[in-house]
Amino acid sequence: MFKVYCYSKCSTCKKALQWLDDHGIEYVPADIKTDHPDESELREIHRRSGLPLRRFFNTSGILYRELELSKKLPSVSEDEQFRLLASDGMLVKRPLLVGDDFVLAGFSEAEWSSRLL
Image 1 (cartoon, helix red, strand yellow):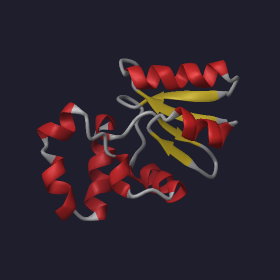
Image 2 (image 1 turned 180 degrees about the horizontal axis):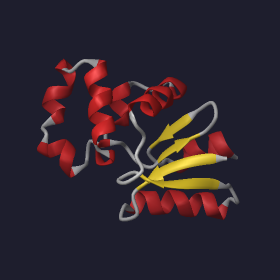
Image 3 (image 1 turned 90 degrees about the vertical axis):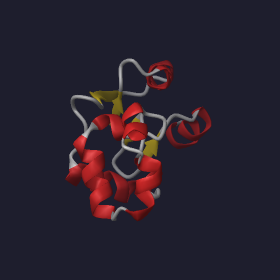
Image 4 (image 1 turned 120 degrees about the vertical axis):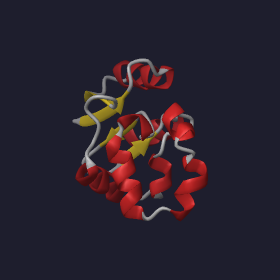
């Protein structure tokens, strides 16, 4: 079963969950704001994903912009990036679908279809 980190007010998250429901794919939802992954979980999620760590930041989020992370991230160590992501779930890209051996960050119907169907 998959775990899907999402935010209830996010329209993209709503579309992703509806897509999973429409395709009969079982999942466990987790509120990214209140039940976000800790640093250890983020390190494992990142390892499974094969994606650059930067892809895990919610670049369109208010907190990301307030912290001016677009300017700061290039000079921030990977350890500090993990600490930042773990500090507040609103910094994490969503929805974040976590499987046993893969991770999908963000919702792309084509990508989700090729991986899950």
